[in-house]
Image 1 (cartoon, helix red, strand yellow):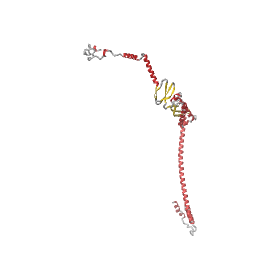
Image 2: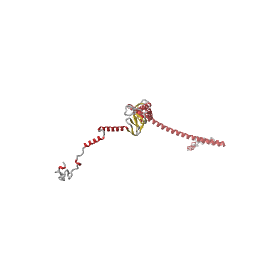
Image 3: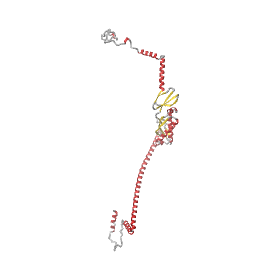
Image 4: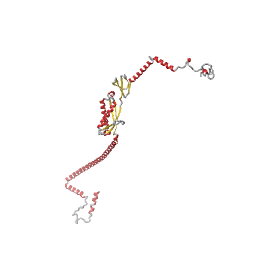
Length: 362
């Protein structure tokens, strides 16, 4: 309800100061100067459109043309300006013919659509061949007529982006097919045992070299860094039989290892016994030689004495020899001329030998 209708033009409490358009405290509400109404939103929009029309030549049709031109310019700039990442290289082409220069990392510009650019990833990439999800693509025939499932991976990098893009239609697929063909050739030349355990690294190295030679012949523009044979397994249908063969081979290797250990043990003992016998023989040889040399020296000394006194020396040798011969004898030899009546009948001859035996035992 307007303030002027309250109690004959006063405030709601009867006061009001008696003035027109006054508020409850004697003052009317704030109104726009000049007594006008607030501006309408539709009017503001209409005025803005009129001003835009006056700014654009040709009216609204000319404005549409300008907007279209701006959009086309933005679209052209988006296609003309490109960025090469550090692990990429750009190959520009003029009317579909590639240029010689290669764009390095950074911001570049081409005159699109006359010139175009294609980006190539030059970082190391990996391809898995004969993966588990493939339908028998990893099955290969070995040189000894066995079938194995070979899964390997190929690590390569692009060395010539221009050749990689334009020399072969599908370089990635071509490289995968070349790697698979080379692996089948190498596996077909060797027995299954080389692929499983014995010579896997050598096979991988030969495959890598052959793939690189074929890629160079096709001018793929790639460098093969590594070929890794990840898994070699028999087909599922014969896996159990193959496992039995593997276990038998492992048992064979175990028995051979045990026999080698036993042979080494016996050989060591025999070498020790032989060394002991050789040492004993050498000691015996030295002892016999020394004894012989001593006997020779003794003989020479006796011979020297014999030359000086032959009779005495001869008698002495006889007595010493007879003493050595008869000292262990149990017989008693007497001289029949020792007495008038011969041997005394009660002489204890058996006891005469006892002191001699005791002395020899000592």
